[in-house]
Structures are given as structure tokens and as C-alpha cells.
Amino acid sequence: MEIGNDDTGQAVHINVEELLATRLLVQGNSGSGKSHLLRRLLEESAHLVQQVVIDPEGDFATLADAYNHVVIDAGDYNEREIATMGTRIREHRASIILNLEALELEAQMTCAAAFLNAMFDAPRDHWYPALVVVDEAQMFAPAVAGDVPDAVRRASLGAMTNLMCRGRKRGLAGAIATQRLAKLAKNVAAEASNFLMGRTFLDIDMARAADLLGMERRQAERIRDLERGCFLGLGPAISRRPISMKIGPTQTSTRMGTHSLLPMPEAEPENLRSMLFAEMETDPMPVQHQSEPEPIAAEELIRRIAAPEPAPETPSAPDDTDDGAGDDIADIEAIIVNVLQEMLADTDSAYQPDALLYQDFSVRCRMQQLASAPLELADFRRRFALAKGGILDPSEPRWKDILKVSTHLPEDMAAPFLQIARAAMEGSPCPDDDALGRAYGTRSPGRIRRLVEYMEKQGAIVVRADFGGKRSIGIPQLGFSTEAQ
Figure 1 (cartoon, rainbow, N blue to C red):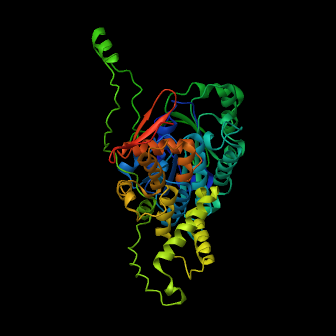
Figure 2 (cartoon, helix red, strand yellow):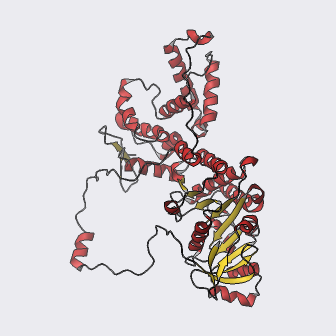
Figure 3 (cartoon, rainbow, N blue to C red):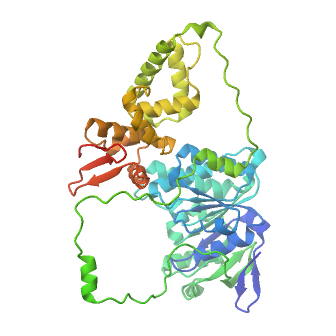
């Protein structure tokens, strides 16, 4: 494929098959044109090989407008769902963009690690060739410990090391880009055999780039003089000797704003002052229903990736005719409520996967002398979410309106919303982030903030906070509000 032109105007090509076997490292300071280079690489090879893009800034989502990429907004899914998608895309050879823009650094590293590990651990029958592009690779494979927990850093670094060191035999070809080689773990950078070095100014980065390109130290100044969009390339897929090139144009572009100068707005000082210091309303602004689409459920996104044939309908279970047939319905419901209460008493249960929770539920039901679990997995997931929200018996009339409002939110948000709605109906203090985190199944404060913001955007709640940090949440459709806390 053609990547650009050299100093004489001749086209510079990259051998894609050789690139898949030998991997690629791109370095350049911010503004040097790394993202443009990666976009050109992805566009030119889109019809040749499956592509997976780990996108921490949301720069590459626009590729889906012109190519067959599926965009996965990581903030809408949990770790288990992300890992499932990582396995499925290897099976169905889908080109995807994992958009991590909505996540904080720690969550980005955790999500990328789960996704890459799932791809790496795919069955041998699914080891199809795939180009895995990781932008801002120094975030996921840092050379030194940073502000994130050590366990998160090790998991992310391990996933990146597997990609670059052991991924070739599994068909995974890493193409990583970094602003500074000094910030990138050496064992990750050392596995690349192809290099594209853009403009950089720090001596330590110029020296490492010159070493990788086989240039003498006195020639390293050449790297500092490169123009934006120009790179020095070397490697079996590019050239046997260092070659200077200017990257060609792209068909798509980022959604980021322009960096060019724009005319300043024309307005009289009095008008600007009146706009800045206009009387501010003391009442809370009404919730505006935004037009942005709701996040796609993980199951639906996986179906879009796989595009399988519709599964046949599962026949309804026949009436019990075995020893459990004599169980009274009221007694069974009482056992379900009792078992859910026992499970909620275990604080760790809020953070365990659904499959493990359902297994625990089934065992506890058998201990209560039931012949089998009285709920299917989907029904149990719903009942357990209601229980975490404080509603053990959804048939009670007082919960009717609350449950009706909750149906407009994704299933995994039911528990925290019901917890808020129940507190509002009872006039209790607003649940804190820890309580909402247990209901949502996360210990990340960032995910809880985004959860509350999303529910507010959907018009399900209205959040009021004072400067002292106390928060109250109202339910507009019910006319209730929690006490401030």
C-alpha cells in the first residue's frame, strides 16, 4: 500500500504482509502528525486486513463513516462485556474501534487490558491476521509507575507485552504510536522491527530514535528539523535504509476542531459584559431530553459484529411434574426473597459476575429443598438488580410507578436508579457514591459520575448540588426528591 512520497516525489510503499509479521512503532511529539499517519495506514489497508484500533481520544471513530468499522464506546459496557466482544471480533473478523474517550486513565488501562487479553486468548481456530493499532501507547505500557494502582499498570503492561512479543503467532500485529520513547516500556518498543520517527525535540528521545534508525548521534538533529507530517522510516516492511517521507492525504478526518487561527467575534464591550454577567436563574434548569442515542446493549453490539442467523425460539418450559411440583407459589416466592436477602448480606456479591451469582442463587435454592432454581438467568438478573435497589417484592403496588419509570433505562442501571427513587419516595438522604457503586457493581468513582450524568441526560433524574458538596436527586416523573447529603 502507498503511505506517502519521498523527497524526490516518488511513492513510498509499505508491504502489509511484512508489516503483519514484523510490527510497527511510530514516535513523534504532539502535532507531528502521528494520528494522520495512523489514519492513512488504516484507510489504505482497510480492504486488506482486519483492523482493531485502541483509541484513547476518540480520534478514529470517523473511520466508521466511510469503512466497515464498528465503534465500541467502552464507557457503555462493563469489563465482562468488553472481554466478550474481544473474543467475538476474532471469530468473525470484524474491524472495530474501541473508543475509550469517556473513561479516565485507570479505566482506560483496565478496559484495554481486558480487550487485548481476550483477543490474545482466542481459540486457535480464530487466529486470523489482524492489525492492532494502539494510539498513545505510553499510556498502556508506561516505562515507570504512575498515579494508577500497580495492579492496573501490570495488567495493562502485560497485555501490551503479549501483543508485541507473542501476538505474531496468534495473527496479531501491533502498530503502536507514542509521543515519547522515553515514556514507553522498553520491552514493548524493542519488539517492533519497523519504525516511523516524526519530529521530536528532547535529546533523550532523539538519541533513542537515532539508535533505532541506525543513525549516528550527530545525525539525530535531523529528527528535530522534520516538518509536520514528515517521518523517517526504516524496516523490512518499509525500507532497508532510513528514508524520509511525507505522509499522503486521508479520506476521513477527526472530529476535533481546527488548530488554525479564527477571527475573533465582533461585539461591543457592553454587549459582552451583559452576556457574561446576565442575571442567573436560582431555580434549577429543566432537564432537556438530548437527542444523542442511547448506548447499544452489549448483546446487540455483539450481534452486529457477528451478524449470526436468528436463533430459534426456546420452547417454554413444561409444567413441573417431578417431586417439586407440589411447591406452593407463595412459598417459592418467599424462598426467593429470603435467598436474595442472604446474598445481599454478602458485600462482595455486588461486584461478582452474573454467572457466578446465579450459581450461588441456584445452590441456595436447592438448600431450601427446591428441585431446581425457580428463576432463569435473565429473570434472576432482573430480580437481583431490583433487590440491590431495595425492592425485594416487585409485585407490591407501591413500587408500580417507580418500576415503570425504570424501564426507560438500560437494565444494568436499574439497581442504582431504584435505590435513588426509593430514597426519594421515602424522603431519605440521597445515596452516596459508595452505595450507588455497590448497586451498579463498580468501585470506580468515575463510572458512578458518568452513570448519574447519563441518567440525568435521559430525564430520569435531576441532580442538585450546593457548594458544600451536598447532593440531592429528584425524580421528575414522580415528583419526589431525596434529602441533601
